[in-house]
Image (cartoon, rainbow, N blue to C red; front, side, top):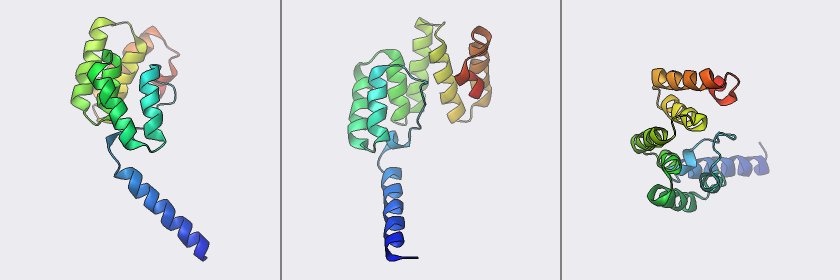
Length: 138
């Protein structure tokens, strides 16, 4: 292996280790359009660019002052899945017909291997919208 290739490999490994250890928000996966709240998207973009400290502050602000759906997403991004679960439940109590919320809550359940709960919510979404791509994939 050439010296340049070795340096690139070392740099890639260092970047991977840095991102893996840089905080909860760095681990949040890209949801490819499953979220429409512009404040949540702004925080996610910080995390996806590797700006973990700024993302954590952004999500912390949303968790403290945002509406229930944004608080759910923020808690999830910060690694507090129990709080995210509570906020999703509260948000759906107020807006029980919101398919985006149901889908995101189902994705939270799926991410924690609570498959029966996830499937039940995905099925609710598909009953109202049989072509909902996020529920179909879920």
